Figure 1 (cartoon, rainbow, N blue to C red):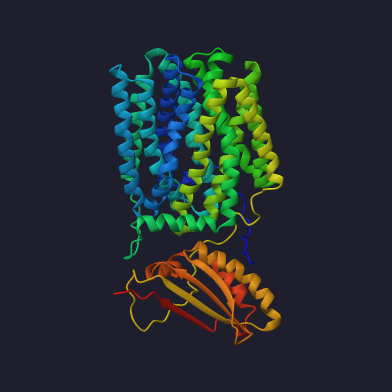
Figure 2: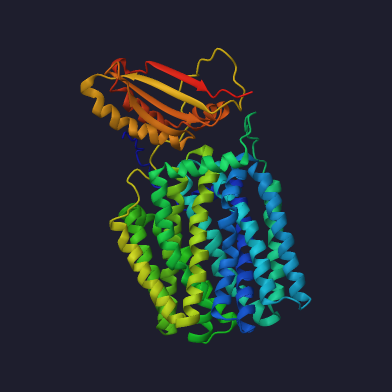
Length: 535
């Protein structure tokens, strides 16, 4: 398999994306909104603790906020690739603001129950699930490619900087006035996001005249991920870390109350310590990643995070604070590494759908993990649950030795290739005509056939990744030198999208490698056979 590597550029400052006015405005708006979200998280979890809810119910706050990702991630990714992302974000953020306001009203009217709170948390999570792929997909529109790792790290700052401020501030407000006030501030914070998006004048994007249907768009995204080994490994590393790591976020309210003896403001301060560690990690981890590599950093981060989990479970406060600082840095180190890796590995045409599947795996693992750790804590105690999760985190770090990120992660050129020739047809097919069977004939000398067949296996993966299916490579019974590649596209429009919008420079490098083993370095014939519609 031929790969094209990119020569590493000189180091980019961790704060370089903030020089862009557009990026800086949206960054600050997200920071304000995330502070509101973390204040609401503190208010929600402490509301349940004060109402005597079980460990399972308290942990379900995390599950309720993350579960919508399991249901909505794929449609959200499809919508973000089909629609104008700015307008989509404005609509979804407005929806989220309205439900945040509804939660505020229920709390002020003193009719909010634990079940109602979990329900409104779920509805707010739906807004986050619908907007997350679009937020991730617009990052390359705001900064150049070499700044994407730095932008991913700063994206973590909007979450973890908010975690440093929001919980501490939220804890103080909850202790002074109750949860309703933080719910109100969270609702108001969404207005900042909406204002920033309205201000942003995003250039119009030509989506083409043959709009892809949402269902087909979602399936194409899934097929892409199934045929992308580099991306699949990133998803695996995400799940292996997120499932055990979710125990800390789910059970920290109980550990803070029962083990450390803190009230609402103390719990907010503990969350703030994690946030401070995460912000420190933004400056620290880029240098470490350049020195040690992404895989080593994933292993170090998993083990470092486990230390904080164990400390919260059984150790005194004077050890808990520095351990949580380390865990916060380890959390942002893992997220930055995984997020930047997948951003740089996805093709432009499928970026939002790919990010939606990444979020589905990461958030889904957290949602499932929060539920599982809550159940274990209800039966064996929160300390036992946290220790078990720490053991799994150490195992996750060790697994990098056998399941590392692929060496070509983030290095393949993802620009759309213009090298695929325009197909010749004697009639103008309707966009929905199909399925279309594409047959490509190659003439290969006998002594080159093994090398050609090996190179074509990578081409087959690329065909499937860009929307083809039923790919196969065949030999001719009447001519020993002929090799026939065959695959199917669901329609003529889908085939045109494949070679016009989806075939990247790295995909072209694969077919170029295969053609180097043919006579004359070219294809001999290409056929497009349409399914005959029965009348």
